[in-house]
Amino acid sequence: MTSPISEDTTTTDGSKAAADSTKSGGFLADTVDELKLVVWPSRQQLFSESIAVILMVSLSAATIAAVSRFFGWASSQVFR
Image 1 (cartoon, rainbow, N blue to C red):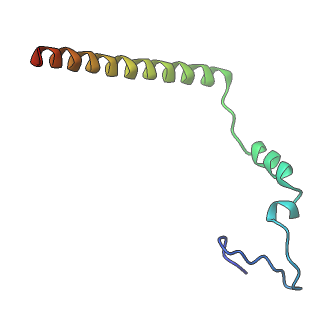
Image 2 (cartoon, rainbow, N blue to C red; image 1 turned 90 degrees about the vertical axis):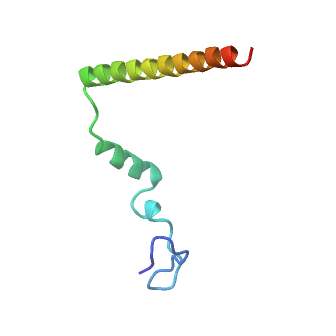
């Protein structure tokens, strides 16, 4: 058996093995299988968390703008 970072993909019969995803149905099939395992949020949860993100981004932007304006004002007072 080889490590995950190994380049050697030979099988026990000496032939080169294809990538693991092609053995089990291909990349697209593996992707669909993984998406079936995802726990999707409800509409209410998605809405409330989106509002929370928008509020936090707005608050952060306002804070950065206020600090920037303060330092701009302070530098104009010092370097007249």
